[in-house]
Amino acid sequence: MPTNITILPLPPKSPELNPVENLWLFIRENWLSNRIFKSYDDIVAHCCDAWRKLENKPWRIMSIGRREWTNGF
Image (cartoon, rainbow, N blue to C red):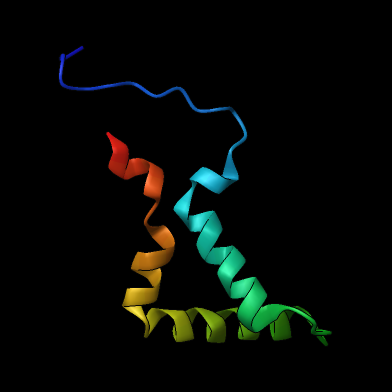
């Protein structure tokens, strides 16, 4: 192991440390919550629409994916 690399053991279940999980949480809270879906296709359509909205905001993706604890090393 190189001396300039520090291994940080992570807990086996740590979704809060996965930036993708935080993106899905943002999508659910802002565009998919408090809805009743008519069908599976309706769920897929709403998810695709929410993803496209987020895709048009790359600065939002960067801010959600960035973690304060990663800057301390």
